[in-house]
Image (cartoon, rainbow, N blue to C red; front, side, top):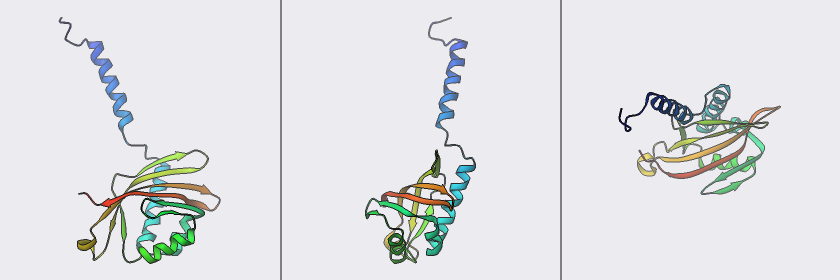
Length: 161
């Protein structure tokens, strides 16, 4: 047998190594926490898209911090709700990019959610185009349910198909 041919033991070790690498390369587990946060995201942005600002307010913690790569930092829930009323309602519709949602537990706090979303401009997409961006949300679970406490909205740019 030539020294250049792999041994059976070597092949088995290579297969085992590839299996470990593949297991770690898979997306995060989609257990109960993932399903919970995915449902929260869907409900929150459904209210956002319908401009149901009372429902939106109900998802936001009183001590909310919102960080936006273009507009900076907001630390007042009511200022954010008013900004949505003036800049989003009837002008923008958010869509989660399928397969982009990731959820990670934060022990003793809740969950960290990341993903990508698209921003449509109904009736104006030929003029305004479609925007895309990334987001990271910190959801905290308290006595009054799940609340968004920290929102990071960044990497905004025109949608790249």
